[in-house]
Structure formats: C-alpha cells, structure tokens
Amino acid sequence: MDDEPKIRRLVGSYLERDGHTVLSAASAAEALELAVGADLMILDLGLPDRSGQDVARQVREHLEMPIIILTARAGEADRIAGLRLGADDYVSKPFSPGELVARVAAVLRRTTSERPAGGARSFGEGILRIDEQRREVCVDGHPVTMTRSEFDLLTALAARPGRVWSRQELANRIRGERDGGAEERAIDAHVKNLRRKLADPPAAARLVLTVTGVGYKLGVTRDG
Image (cartoon, rainbow, N blue to C red; front, top):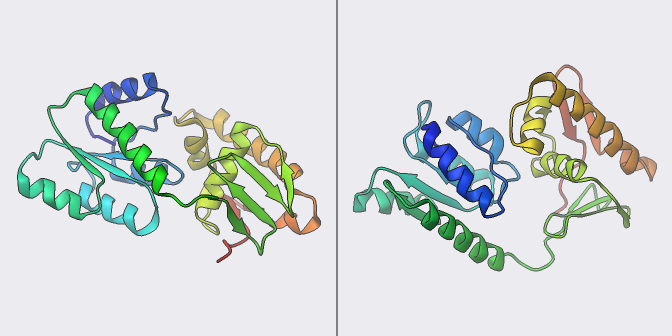
C-alpha cells in the first residue's frame, strides 16, 4: 500500500513477475478493506487519509499477517518505531525493487515456517473446515471441490465470520481490482454456485447468508 501511483505500479510489477498476486491500495481505508485474506502487507507510513502507524496497529489487532514497512522515514527512531508496531521488516526509500521482492520472499518463508502444521480452521461446530494452505474445504467431513473464485470467496467470508461484505469488497478480494457492476454481478453467480456445493447436509444452508441491500456474510462462527 502506497499513496504514490508510480511506486505502486513499480512494486506491483516486480512482485507479479515473481509470481505473487498483488492487491494495490492508495489509502488506508482501501488497504484495510483489501487486507483480509492477504498473505502480506507492504505498508507506507505516509498516507493521505490516516497514518500508516494506525493501519499497522489495526492490522495487528485483527489479522495474522506479516507487514513490511516501506517509507521515506529512514531515521533510526523511525525504524525502531515501525518494528515496535509489529512490522516484520523495514525498507527505506529510495529502494531497490529487486531487494524488496527478496525481502517479501524471506518474510513469507519465515512466517509460513512459523505457522503450526495442519492449518485447517473449523466453523459451526465442525460443519465447515477450511485449509487455506492446501486450498481444501470439507462440509460435514466430506471434501467439496471448488473453483479458485469460489474458494477465495469462501475464505474471504470466513476470515471474519459474521462480518457483512459488500459485493464490491468481495470482488476486490477475488479479482484484486475494481471492475464495476459486471464484477459485482459475478459475485452473485459465485455465491449461487457456492451455496449449491455447500447445501448438503441441510445444516450447511446457513453457511453463506444474504444481508438484503448490503451483501453476504458467513452465518456460523469459528470453533475454538
């Protein structure tokens, strides 16, 4: 996340070349909207609508994801403050895009290796299980085959059970870009297909709920 379009495009192109899917944001509000379900955040401390420090604190309160701070504030006190916020790495401007990509890879390797084995999450007293690392979903103990978009939609809803997601927010999470009404209508189609696949047993029908005039939410809570 950076408020300078040229930097966002530059960093995004290098990361995509290295095989990453990039969600780009120009403001704190947009970044927090896109953060749920992401693997890592590159965060600029100088943002137009809110301080980067506030964004880092909010991410740390609600999400388990590594943060790399990218900023022109290169002083020792700034680096220490950033690391105290919970940042996993700190890169000062001007920077080498290649080095930043290498740091992203290193942080992801480290944080992935620190995660406990068997990262499946359970919801609704075991009715739904999602393993994001293996991209596997089970309903009542039975595996469910899903498309990439269906899986990404379900994991976005499951990241914060009970939280209502608008169609646009879900479109952003799945595609990583804003594509207007056509993309929002595609979300309705994905939800329809997802519900069909999750509808057995009957108790699973409450997994994905419609909130009229707003969007969708996961209708069960996370176990444990």
